[in-house]
Length: 266
Ligand SMILES: [Zn+2]
Image (cartoon, rainbow, N blue to C red; front, side):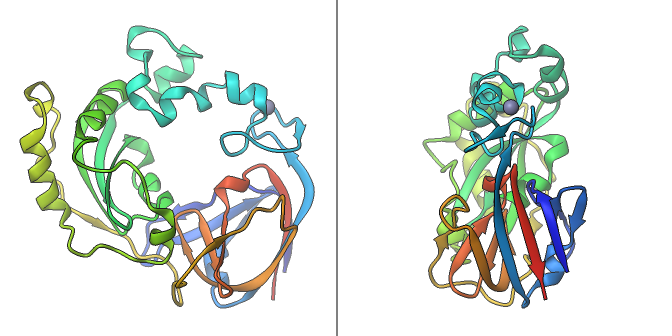
């Protein structure tokens, strides 16, 4: 079977194990059913911005041309730094967009990727956000009515817990199993300022994720389709937004959003 077209980030379903589809052109390719098979991916030397569709040589913020990166509400500063969101004060690149995305219910969560981390996401992005980062466990910590409040809580916790994913350890499945998210949540409640205590959730339970895999690699080498035009290897796992191959190479599909490729599986 051979598919070709522009790719977008993988779409996941929270099954056991998680199922993944890659959007290629107008098709949804059930890539998690290709486990243990040889896959050939060719970059067809064409990239288009996922917002305005102009042809570009490289992407910014995973799929955008430079003007869209600077102007689109989807690449606002507050996407990476929720504490910088000003939509609650009526200020943003596009208030209509912000009403639907920033001024909605958000969660602050704890997740276990390799170590524990804290993060912020819009309510409708759960559990997608957790699967995209390759979390094996996640726990809702607080619920807020907008993005800014969630960001303020996250910032307050940054001295106590990381906000980053150690992606190489995540892909090698090197999980710190001494971490207990429920216990961590209780510790963090003790350090949070009183003004934020009203947002803390009670009665939440830890959610588990299992990723499709045969095994996980001992070391990982990330592939860049601008440098390596062709990949041919056996698929051994899918985790986060990565395809993992039997030669220790990994491909971050999300990073290549907007690239035109062909994918062949035998
Ligand atoms: Zn564009």
